[in-house]
Image (cartoon, rainbow, N blue to C red; front, side, top):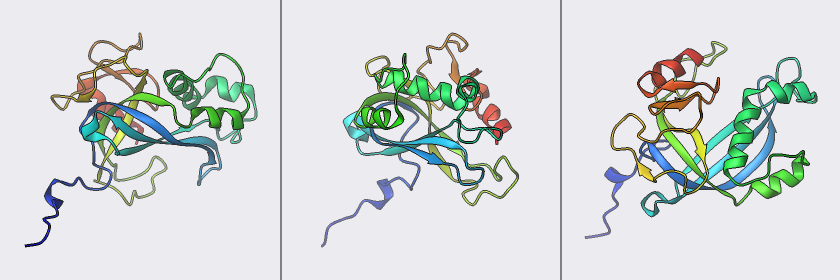
Length: 201
């Protein structure tokens, strides 16, 4: 008899982690232009390294900075008011990259790669349509999503025991049972998080 391949235990693409907290290493970090409106954004690929049982899983996140008025984010005001910029700064700070001074983009990208950060993840079902009303070809599929960043050592690692996240974010606008929405950057009760994200879809 040949080697048994355990397909029944292998997660489907995009559905590889239980909801929980993991240490991830930044594999990629790059400046990009969004396809539809040409806005400046930063994409990152995060590979889980701890706990060992989950090592190798890769998640992706993006931070859109540009706006309809200033797609290339050339104005300081755009950065000051961008939700994506606030998320980016938090991500960098938790990855131990200095964010209290201006920095050249090329230098920043070089500094970020290889850094480690603690990520809080959830499982999210893809909406039927995108925000602009166009059909979502991945509608109904479930993917892992990073909803919060912490410094390594700041939170206990591993999957949550239940569906509701057991690790609390430290943001003051949140509470002991809240998550910070990555879209509007406000604290949302864990029990209402799914419905809140649907409002953004």
